[in-house]
Length: 399
Ligand SMILES: Cc1ncc(COP(=O)(O)O)c(C=O)c1O
Image 1 (spheres, rainbow, N blue to C red):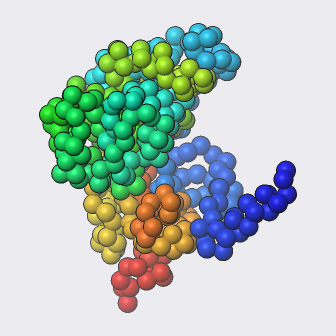
Image 2 (cartoon, helix red, strand yellow):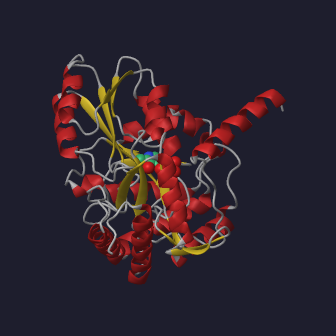
Image 3 (tube, protein in one colour):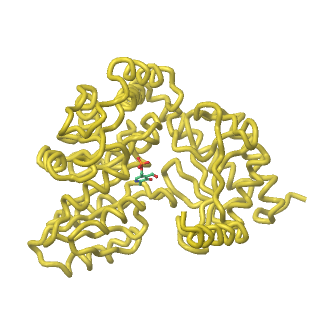
């Protein structure tokens, strides 16, 4: 290693430590669940996982993965078009498409690679992309790789989006790209307005519903279902690494022509291995569990409503929203990290997010609700929030 360069990196890391913004990886020794054992902190309640439906340690999901490993081995040791694809990938893709009410679907090893494969493939030179300023980093990076003209509209600002659409040639294809549920705010994209604008301005709507799939909508089919827009959004991307089993994996769901175009041309499909078959099997089982157990979604929602209400009663002012994400803005990055450390010391695992993940000055504790959590977990966590918030002076003291 070039020692001067290595020393420079060391200095930069030291500066992060000194500023209190250094991220520390925690090591778990048990499966993701309502509570986990953490090497550094013992048994802790988890409020920071995307395990929204509690399926990460679901026995049927685990067994499906084990069966997948026995049936298919580890993988094909190559990309799909070179060495073939497993029938379980086709079964999962058909399931995802029918679950979302879309014509077809294609899986990737993550939603990151799905977005990065999709956006530059569709948004070629001569087209335009209009992207919400708070979109996920994978969308931002996907847009950076595209040859299209790129415009960023203010967060959920429909007047700004409309003005930008109107500034482009009427016959130009315009890709409007948005998160379904914004991951750091927990708010929903204004999809009815976005779809209406797309219909007037030759737009193609792409929704990344990673935090909405399994969570939003009457039956957990996502933000598109929530708004009654099934069949009117052109492309949906999402992850299998959150509500749908929590391992990894992502997908694009769209028309058969879009999916075939991705098979032919998208670089993260052509030059990268498939989703491991173990994960394909467990994700398929997770979708079936979701469909067969609507009580999971009902419990996740009841937990969210209870935790939100009690947080406000304690004196917090979380951002309002309809999703399972409950952000509490605290301002300073080091403060957010310090607060999450104090909560961890009280047995609650919840992460503080700061710059550059969120804009400077809007650091936050992001609470995420799961169907895995029982009322005693929630009450213990709320007691910790009350104690830590009082000690830090961010909620009114009771005495
Ligand atoms: C909106 C959104 N898109 C994409 C991703 C990336 O998903 P994956 O972990 O499958 O790459 C995330 C994960 O944080 C996300 O929140």
